[in-house]
Length: 182
Image 1 (cartoon, helix red, strand yellow):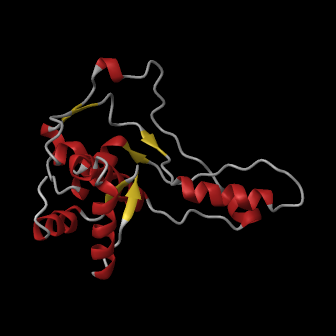
Image 2: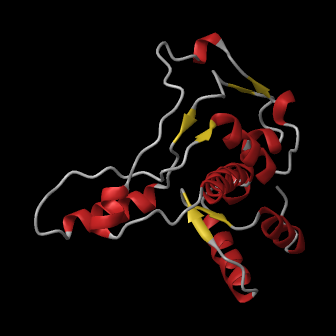
């Protein structure tokens, strides 16, 4: 979705979009693992959200996140090369035991998960857009200057793969205000 919304990719090929899965955030699952390790006696637990959502629902939310209402013109579905030979249509976990014995429940909703994933991809793809600007031997000086400028203006600055990133519009604005070109 990120690459499509940025004009870097024309379409996305998928198999069936009807199967339903129990989608969950890894951070929530790591918390469950930590809670398991705090128990006096080892035990087996199912860690799941207890909700299921189709791949189609994922597409709806993901494309909404990038501002595309009708994703059907960008997604090719039922592509035979992406079909699973033995597809399970409905997967959902029951985390009752984890909830009762560990006090664990997922904190991240399906919608939040999809938005986090898409925004992470947008940030990653946005960094590639600025790779030429921030690459090279002089990049440390430029990044240092930009970090100071961004921090002084209360922007959130994140480094990914040694590239400075923030909101794409803020970086573009800052670069143009500093007379840097992409």
